[in-house]
Length: 196
Image (cartoon, rainbow, N blue to C red; front, side, top):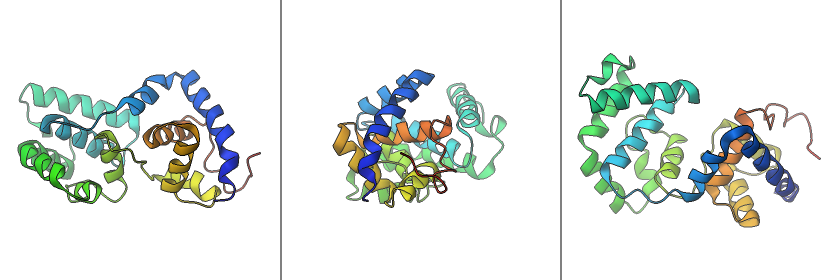
């Protein structure tokens, strides 16, 4: 992780660019997220992550909004979302949210427990954990490309930047992810070009 020290000033710069691009609210949310304390919020976060799995953020946001409307109006979810596997997972989490949440609270390894939920996998368990208030990063392809460039892992990269900047790990994750999505960081070129 010898090159990581060069990322700190770059991180501060891209954080400013992410804020200027209109995503200050995302950074604020990540810096203030509290541990989840009820089963309904737990279920809603799980549903959000399930919607996001394998989809672009904008599309997932629209689907999630439709699902929330369906839930609040007792409309069958499958009438607004045509993905049988994800609908089944969402219904499972909604119907069992109290016991699922209690098991989560009692789990010694909360992140591993999350992976036992339907449509929550090896990467998305970190997304859900972060949204539930655990201070972790989601080692998705965007963060992984940045970490590979710096010859480290996403968890080590975000942890080190968190220590150096005082930002939560989840904030570092949001900043790097959003910068990648918005083209502030070109993660595809990182393997070919060296940042200075």
